[in-house]
Structure formats: C-alpha cells, structure tokens
Length: 217
Ligand code: ADP
Ligand code: MG
Image (tube, rainbow, N blue to C red):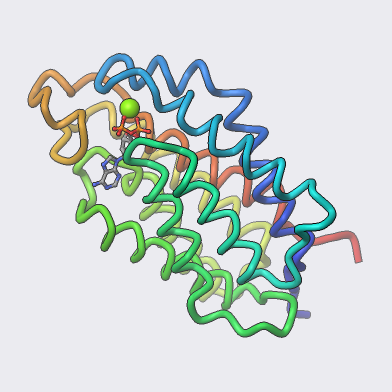
C-alpha cells in the first residue's frame, strides 16, 4: 500500500523544524562562534519565529504544499539574515517546483522534492560536498532517501535512513576545512569544528522524519 503525506504533515514539519531550532539555538550560535560570527542560532530563531507566527495565523492558511513552502521560503529569505536564510529559502522554493497541486505527496514525489531542493541550495550557494556547509548533511540525506524509496521502503524507514545519513554528514564536517562561506576565511583553522549550517540542516531532516512518518491509518 502506498503511503501519502498530507498538507497538515508538511505544516507539522515546518513547525517541528522551528521547535528544534529554538531548542538548539545556543548550540548553533556556539558552533558559529568557533568558525563564523556567532549568529547562526540567532538568525535561524528570528526566521523561524516569523514562520511560526505565519503558520499559526488562521487567515494565512496555505491551501496546498506548494503555497505553504513558498510562504515559508519567503519568510525565511526576508527575516533570517546571514547566508543561511536565502539557502533554506532556495531549498523550499525548489522543492515544490514540480509538485502538482492535487493534495498529498507520495514517497517517490518526496524524494523528487528533496532532490530538487538540494539542487536549489547547490545553485544558490555554489558549494560542493566537503566544502563544510549545510550541503554536507543535506546531500547524504537526499541520497539515502532516494536509495530507500527506490528500494520500496516505507516513508518512515526511508526518512530514518535520511536522518542517519544527515547526522553522519554533520559530524564529519568537524574534520573538514571550509571553502565556502564565512568559515572559509579561517582556512586550516576551521578544521576541528562542526559546521553550524550542517547542524541546522540536520535538524531540518530530523524534523521531517518526526513529522512525515505515516499516520496511524
Ligand atoms: P553568515 O555566515 O552570513 O553569518 P549564518 O551564520 O546564518 O550566516 O549561516 C552560516 C552557515 O551557512 C554555514 O555554517 C554554512 O553551513 C552555510 N553556508 C554558508 N555559505 C554557504 C554556501 N555557499 N552554500 C551552502 N551553505 C553555506
Ligand atoms: Mg554566522
């Protein structure tokens, strides 16, 4: 039986992402203090507070996943500040580029959404794997999701694979030297610290796994 993901679950994904960012604000800012300018937690909290306000306003309810993501993307782009806002915006805008407006999303469509979103981040930021950016957790997550979905796994287990891959990628950024973003100014001194954006991107995937898993039907 093929499972489908509902609009309400995508809303829950965004709200869960907001919650995880609020819970990890200090960590994200500490990581950015080591290799950046100590604002990643503050930036992300600012943006996701706005997202939460929007999603909780009954007069602004989105009618489909595409308009939901466009609205969250525009909110992040205009309110996060710093490099990460436009990159998360690009992920969400591109993720819905080929979605059809007929309601729920299958696991295959979800894998396409993640791939398209990843390409949005790549095009916007021009970073590659191992540049020590959010791509280092996002890209392995997308690849793991694609492999699991292609193998016919249920959405829950495909997303668990994606979270595990994102976590591994996030932890591995500690070994890397940054070649994109503010951390690249440090050169070899960026080695030994986990990347803040790879950490918030892991939280995005973790939030997806917590929200998009099958409902009890
Ligand atoms: P800023 O660097 O402007 O202060 P933030 O601190 O909010 O912005 O975000 C920093 C994070 O953004 C980095 O840890 C990195 O993961 C991510 N990042 C920066 N530049 C790029 C890029 N070109 N591509 C992908 N991610 C990037
Ligand atoms: Mg910063």
